[in-house]
Length: 268
Image 1: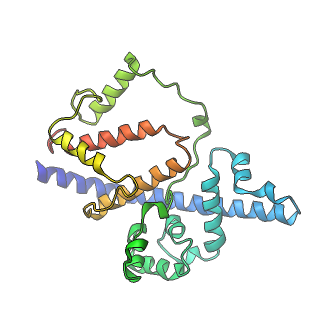
Image 2 (image 1 turned 45 degrees about the horizontal axis):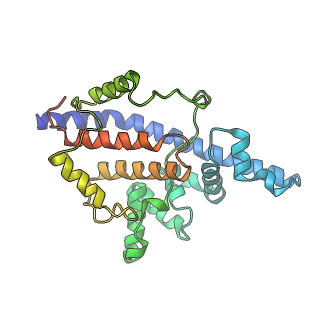
Image 3 (image 1 turned 90 degrees about the horizontal axis):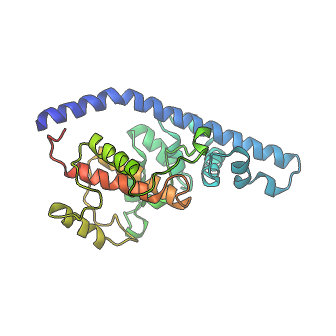
């Protein structure tokens, strides 16, 4: 069964590679174009003698809607620094440049990423190790915010969705259907953990909230990339005050992933 699951996983990964690459290239191209537009808008207003307060990142976010001032600033700054040269780094995504934005030696490491096909995490790790791996400069998720995320949302999403009242039949049905689709058992979400679950929960409580990832074991590249993306996404939503998604909803997804990892290999 394990061999069959591994074979299926490889098949899915190989079949998805082309489409994931196309998606990442689309997001990358879109972010470059957005950064150029913001930059030219600012330059136009500045050239026309407009007051500085009229062409800030906050002002653009208010004009356009569906994008945060933080993301507006990232788009603009990446274009300002790399807009005239990014096409010379074949194979890199916008997020590589965003990660290297404040590096004085960015060009060297971007070229290294081209030659060695480094991911963002690998590029950051390589640079840190080349500096002697000082503990106080070890790459942290907080150093790069929402690397590959496009924070724009559809205008249709502007209308708040009615949330079910906790404990009502609609909420219970939604929760049960989500868990059933993921292959979980019928245990209530608020049931007290026991055994393996209790030990995991106790470990989580003991983690230093200021350095929650310190001392964690190394992960294989696929999980390392996935965890890095999740950490950056959570950081982004924390910085915007959870205005796009409730914090509790994210915690429920993380709990569901923990349950999914603990499920037997042949469960579905």
